[in-house]
Structures are given as C-alpha cells and as structure tokens.
Length: 262
Length: 202
Image (cartoon, rainbow over all chains, first blue to last red):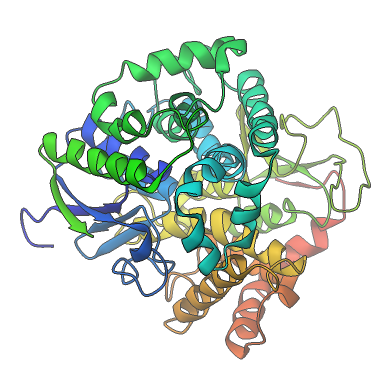
C-alpha cells in the first residue's frame, strides 16, 4: 500500500452493515474513501467483486488487503487502529462482543429481513420480480407483512432485552462496543420507519437513546431520517432515491471522499 | 481449564477438534439439546448458553458461544498452535472474513440447499452458487482457505463438508480438501471423543 493511500469502504446507505462500518469510521476519525454502489451494481460481476466474491457490501479495501462481512471489517479496523473503547480491552467484555457479532447475522438481522426489507423494497417491486426475487416479492405482497414482521422483531427484542445488557446501558457492559453499533443499525431503522415501537422494552429503549447520543449519529443515519415513516406512507422510488442521495451527501459533508457508481 | 458444553454430532463436535489442534487442557461436559430439525431432545438446564444450544465454552468464568466466536477466541488465546493469524498478521483480515463468511453465507446456503429451497428460489440459488464458487476458487489457490496455512476457518468449513457433503457440488477439489482436513490426527481423535462423555484431557 502506498504511503498515505486511503482505504476504501464500498457500501450503500440503505445497507445496515454498510452504515455500521461507516459510522464506526466516522466516530474514530478514520481517513477513508466511500464508494457508493446502487442496487444494480451489487452482486457477482459488479465493481466490488474483485474484493469480495459475492459482490456485496460492505467491503473494505485496505491496500492489498480486502475484508468483507461487517463483523470481520469492524474487528479488523478496531484491531488495526487500536480502538480500545469499541473493542474492549477487558477480555470478558471483548468475548461477549465477539459473541454478539457472530450471533447477530442469524438473529438480529431477521429484523431487517422480516420487517424492514418488505416495506422498503415495495418501491422497486417490478425490478425484483424481473430478477426472480420471489420470496421478497411474496413477503412485500403479503397482507400480513406488518404484523408478521413485527412478530419476528418482538422475538428478537425480547431475547436481546433478556440476554444482553449484563451491567450497564450497552449490550456488553457500561460502554458502547462494535456489537452496539452492529445491533443499532438493525433495530433503530425500524423506529424511523414507523415499523416497530420498542417502548415496551425498557433496556432497549434506554439503549436506543444512549446510542443516538454518540458522535456522528445524524450524518450516519441521514438516509433513515429522509426515508422516514414507510409504514404510514409506502416507500416510493423517488423517496428512496432522495434518502440514498442524502445518506451519501452526509458522508461527503463529513469530509469523506465519495465516489458514486450511479 | 476450558470446559466445552457438548452434544455429540452437533456443531460442538468441531470444537473438540479445535481443542485437540490447540493441545490445551479441556474438559467435555455433555449436555442435551433440543434439535429443531427433528423435534427430538430437550434443553439441558446445565447448559449455560442462554439459547441452550451448543457449542458453548467456559474459560476462567467467561462464557463464549457461537462457533465462529469460539474459534476466534481460542485461536487467539493459544497462538503457539499457529492455527489463527493473530492481530497484525497480514492474513488477519482474510481470517476474520472467512470466520464471518462461514456463519453469514456458507451455513445459510448449505442448509437452504439441503432443504431443497434453492431450486425454486433464484436468489437463493445464485447465493448458493456464489458461495460454492468462492470456496472452489479459494481452494484452487492452495490446500487450505488461507493458502498453505491450516486455520480455525478450515475447521468450520471442513466440518460442514463432513456432515453436509451432499449439499455441495461434486468436486474432486472439495473431496480432497475435506479428506485433507478431516484426516488430521486432531480431527480423527476428536471423532473418537465425540460420542464419549465426561472426557478430560489434562
């Protein structure tokens, strides 16, 4: 890697894992470039595939090193840059954090797949039909999609409420870690989108407020703010495009060099 | 000493393999689990894992669950065994990616394929094909996922091939890889221990 060469984060503001990595980088003041991909650039054959065999985001390009899958990227960055806050030095807290990150993809992410995705993707239903994404189309067409998705999220919320927050306001202890950032991206979006109310979960409610007070919260989530309530008023292509644009512009406003693959 | 909460022929079997590779002292504490796929078995109150699944390990009072987290924890804790690139190692990022990829991609697509869900769902089929291509392309470059270097990531992937080989395409490369990994002495020993209970290696 040439001296001074910036690492590149490939992402899109609509991707929860991409937002998690971008937010962590902003919080820690990393010098990075952001390569913004639209949906049609994702997947095999897309521009990120040389760095990630699935062609998906987030993907980190750090000189000759490519890292993909959100937990791997966050841990890699935290270890490389010595983020002793987000990656706790205390072994017990660190272990719990690792545990969460590997638990996350099969559990907390169901909140996105079960509730958020069917409501966001109604905006481009025709394209998904053409691409043969039959399950997602069936989910978005279901008359029961809100209640069915909320049942999944309730299960997720109940387990996190009961099984995490061992001592303090954050998932692994008294301070936020990478686990909190990963989890927040999945759950917080549901509140902006009007899809789920966490007020019956006291620990999660406190945690959502505490996370919202972290630095760079607004630019890291401007996409969600602009997208707004998609339960009351269904998402549209125009609205989705405006939210994506706002999310990317927010990074540029923070001084991140942005390259768009439009 | 590390305690492994174990149920035979489950995801905890591979943690015995890992512990054998590391050569560290450990004890196996057998527990029963509920198996959603068959409806058999019951959750064991003695299992400290909040989900009552296995694997789970305890080390000096610390509970670790989730296979990939356990692999990372143990390979970091016992660096002398040389089966997990440590912090600062040029292959650390690649190693972390494989561990996360295993849980997020390989396992999900493997079970989807085994359940016959991919044929009728083009998106799942594409994802499955991408997973297989990544695996085969990587193994074309070297005997292990990290090239010449056997690692904890191989234990995850090769153990999956051990119990779900039919979910992957016919391939001499995959067969040779599975045989190479699963033929290691630690893997052989682990299979011998798998169904035993109360085993202790001091």
